[in-house]
Amino acid sequence: MEKITDLSQEQKEFAIDLLVTLVVEELEKNPGGDPTSLLSAFVASKTGALLYDESSKLWWNGPSYIAELYREEQKHNQEKRSTNNESNEPSSAQTRA
Image (cartoon, rainbow, N blue to C red; front, side, top):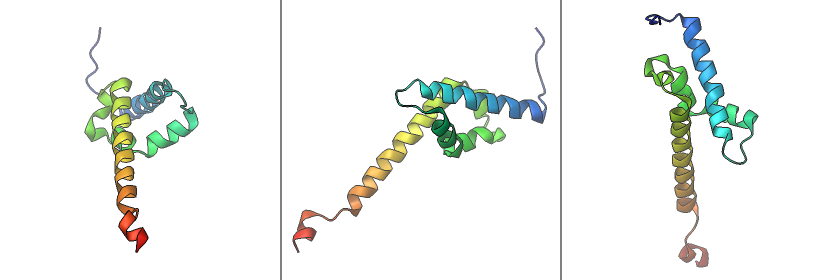
């Protein structure tokens, strides 16, 4: 088997696009996953941006690993939103005043 030492820019872009497809398929395994909305959300995420940043070498990893990174990002974002919502809600002492 011949070892590939250099990939053209086109080959790298194709590999990344293919990985995005495979990551979305992996994410679809969870109930309620709509492929179109998952694709849009993934590409707009920090994980998606990092995947398209070739210098990160994230594209060297498999789709399951990348999907897990995305899930962790979404979990962190959800926790952050929850914390922000709680801090923006008036306390019971403030609502009585």
